[in-house]
Amino acid sequence: MGSPFWIEKVFGRPLSLVLALSLASPLTAQDVSPALLQAALEAYQQGQQKKPEILPLAQVDPNLVGKKVVVYYHDGRQERGKLLQLTAEKIQLQTRAGAHEIPLAEVGSVQKQPSRAGRNAMIIWLVGLGVFVTLIVGAGTVDD
Image (tube, rainbow, N blue to C red; front, side):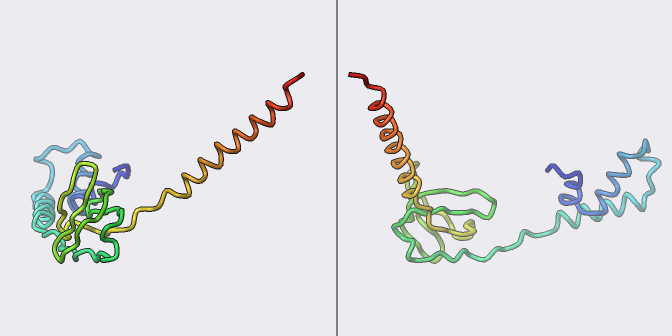
């Protein structure tokens, strides 16, 4: 939360205004008007009464079953593994830690894991180039 307005995101505008005013001036609780305190209390209670949004279930491609995937959760986490099973309510994922089930209500999306073939080919190409250059330089420096 690098922004100075993180209070506004968390508590709402009225409460952040009260907090900003209280931090900016050396007022005590007796100096603040009761109406302002009541407004701050109401804003806080409205924020507490907000119910979490019910997010729709993730649409997972059935063709991904048996393939390596990346599971993105609603809360920002991600997990990699092999998609073993897909049902209407959950997915089963095989990871290094073992197989476990994940409810679709927690899943934001499931995408195929990117292939590493291009990276591996680049590494092999660079190693081959290094060997070739070593042989050429080595052949030019050998004196009979």
